[in-house]
Amino acid sequence: MPILDLLSPQHVLANVAAADKAQLLEQLAAMLAGSSAEQRLIGEALNSREKLGSTGIGRGVAIPHGRVPGLDRARAVLLRLSSPLDFNALDGLPVDLVAAMAVPEHNPEQHLQLLAELAEMFSDSRLTTAMRQAQDSGELQAELAKFSRNRPKSPPWTD
Image 1 (cartoon, rainbow, N blue to C red):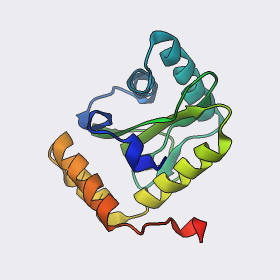
Image 2 (cartoon, rainbow, N blue to C red):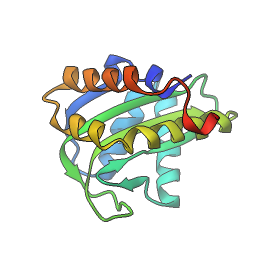
Image 3 (spheres, one colour):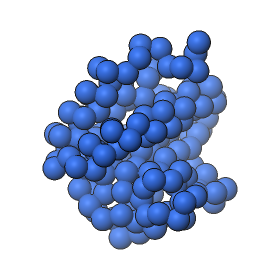
Image 4 (tube, rainbow, N blue to C red):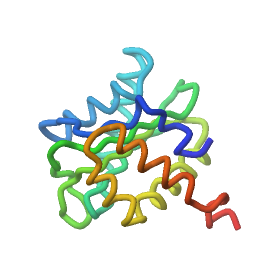
């Protein structure tokens, strides 16, 4: 399933507040989970991945992600933060755009596919600029929809 199909309107949010990276990861786990047990497992996966190295990829973008045991399907959420956070990103810039995902532990191929799609999406500077200028969640969703309509039908890595 393409990443944009996972980002339903209730999973695309603008002006999200978080005091720090740890609080943001907790919020992301809650948004991605369907139950308190899943929230704990997703939180552990996000934090474990973050301990390996920051998922702040640069240019104000972070992609926290994790493979989660017992998860039935992939889930994703996209946020624009109300205030940028220090994320120990590769370029040292604070993060204001966050796409988080949790995928079933037994599906590493899907995990890599979704990461590649997110990297492609965030490499489009027109999209990231529009996402930062969106006034609310509705505008943020509209920018994603426009990007989805205008992108090639097959990702370049499948040729």
